[in-house]
Length: 350
Image (cartoon, rainbow, N blue to C red; front, side, top):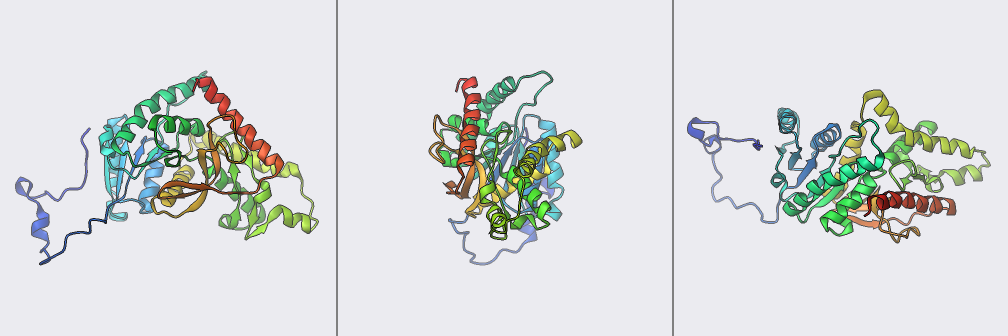
């Protein structure tokens, strides 16, 4: 489809009004060759993709934002809707196309596209359709942006991140899944709500599968630098393990509740993915629980599997995995979560 962007050719016969509107600086130096713009491409202009795009724009994370989707009319409508907000946003060039060539030179490619489950369809069949979709998405992204970082948001995110890694041929540090970054935010919110503190003062991680087998790392939770469980034990304050499990179950059920109420999730995942984009593009070196190649970490073995671990993110993608201390029970649950994902991969024959 036609790419649309801002143009200064508004005068008669396409005259470039920039030349008439501005008087040039005499003996001006050319822009530094080391100065370059950042470019982020979002594949999938559905509810999730557009929430991510909108959040990236409002947080001024990129100089150029590209939208790619298979539906040309909706895609152009979304692009125009964002372009029309230009007076209220930081200056960003916004492009859209059904042709992946528009993504060329992207620093970060965010994939949100995915098939929707139909009534009576098995999870395996849905996954097979998404694998087929990724076979059409990942190769052209890689061809046009061979030095980019892939950030996968489509579900089931752990298996599809593995698929993207295999299809791309990229080193594993440049293929990342959004994983449990949002789950951990929900976890921190619930703990903060219980303690009546700001969620930003809560350090807490959900790791493993982005799904039912995820693992809450209770042993490493801290609030304002104070380890919560050890503090309760030192103060001889009793707590019920069932209460902790109920909070974890509430985290797992949060997305289902939102979907049942409004039909889909969008804003929270938009902010979550934008936070990952910020850490990567701005080389923030922040730690996020994201889906990474986990083999060799925390005694995870038995095959190549992507699942969420606390990882440091920067301009090179995944810079390292944090050595968070896990209890024996947490380690065992994490390994079981890895086996759950591997079983799905084995069903796919990959």
